[in-house]
Image 1 (cartoon, rainbow, N blue to C red):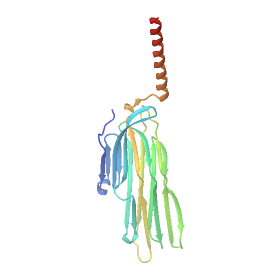
Image 2 (cartoon, one colour):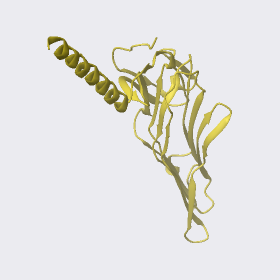
Image 3 (cartoon, one colour):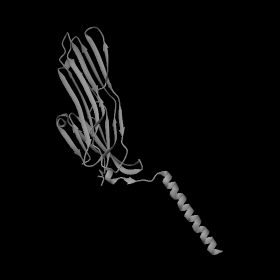
Image 4 (tube, rainbow, N blue to C red):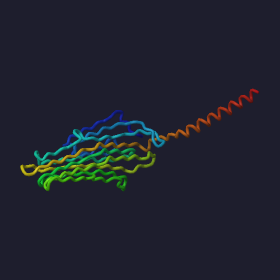
Length: 238
């Protein structure tokens, strides 16, 4: 039976605690966080694909600013952000939405810095998404480099079914490093973090809902029975 949360649940994890945090959210979802994040849970009754079910949605956002900026004038600096989420306990995934993300890197005069990201979605043994972003390079003089990398939004909508589910795993990871700037070399790195929503339901608790055409046929059938009964009563009365 689907677990009813009764109210929205928000989890705010500090960066220190989140370094090794793996959370079992009410037996439906396993959520791993490698840096500060905020997870909000909501539930709603939904009708889709001719089934009525209770859908639990986990929305994950950075616990703070969406953009992380590392300035070499305060270096050396390192930052990362990671989320791993998967369905567990016999629950199936109904919907996954990942927003757009971006990484920027500016290096001047052999300054040392780097930034990278990866977004992936695996369904069972199949990889449906493996995105390292689309980099664009721009060069100034021979000592100046600017690279920005864009990550497109991603959407996955599963067909609702009462059958045993496949496991869906979503991984997000962004990281950046800058060295200490000096009078001859400078740089900075930043990444803008995407929002992630991950929705699950219990396939053992879905309830079939007839299509509108089926209701129309049922209505016509009842109307026919009523007319036949009325004609029979009229004949008996005569």
